[in-house]
Length: 216
Ligand SMILES: *Cc1c(COP(=O)(O)O)cnc(C)c1O
Image (cartoon, rainbow, N blue to C red; front, side):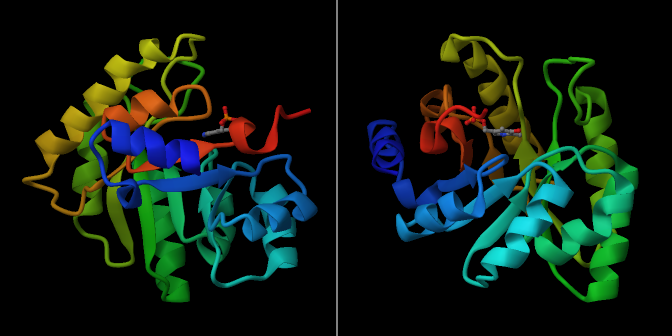
């Protein structure tokens, strides 16, 4: 947390603008409780089944759970029930499914559109030329607010290799804001490249390894 604050200050940014999402995939409940004692408030999970077991055990309404993994439409109900924000909306179909479930539960959801700027076939997300469709689809929704974009850039050891993707995502957000003013959030940056992401405007960083160690 201190390193993130210091990265924000060095980048000339207010640390309170940046949410640290502690990624707890494969991290057990005991460790999550320790993380809560240490001051972490927002947790990110990738797999619904794994997440539900933990969320139900922790039962702490003051903590927020964000879903950051690939979400199948048949898991949308659980995602809406147990999470406050979904970073990984990757199709119009999924967006509509979230809206449907959120409407049933009368629950306001924050969602982010995942953008596959690297054009990688192994990654999910809207391709650059499909993003407008996702945004247009968000216009008619009542329960799901599209708050911004998320990216997982192609993995390179060198964090500088991620910079062009982070920058492009920020420019894309700025470009779309006049038509879609709810777009404010940039979910970008992981353990190895969050400093670069913060320099490029990240408002949410998703950090696992740097908090909990290497996953087994
Ligand atoms: C696992 C994961 C992270 C965290 O990665 P670390 O390198 O462990 O910080 C962030 N975002 C997503 C989508 C992930 O799946």
